[in-house]
Amino acid sequence: MGIIFPTFVLFLSVIDAFTTWYVVTNGIGYETNAAIAWATNNVEFYLLKVIITALMLYGIASFCNGYEKLRMVSFTSIAIFYSIIVLNNIMAIVAGIDLNLNLTKNFILFGAIFALSNFWILTVRIYP
Image (cartoon, rainbow, N blue to C red):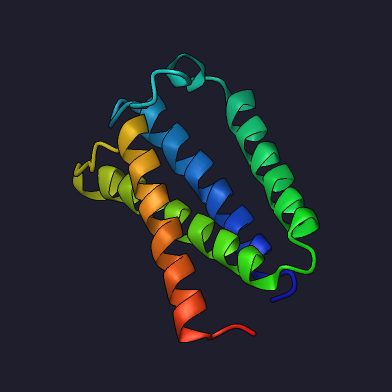
């Protein structure tokens, strides 16, 4: 797996930060997560968001050392989750369509993605 998955997730995190900033600052949409909505007009917030993602990826890589399937499930889940968020932002920019991904929906979505990718990786045995 190496560095490809974490790099891809970090790339998605940067795209998420940029597209979210663009949507919010141009009045196309708004941040549905009330806990962070107040910070979305600050560029520093998005930089911090990317740094936290990088630290999270480092933590997964470090703490899952020796547990390759758990690492793969974690990185796959996060990549799918960020892909959905980025797709939502791009749809808002291009077509004005919004999935309205509030905090509750995000937790449910991520939990479902984690469970399904865990089942898939463990059942299909695509990864040793």
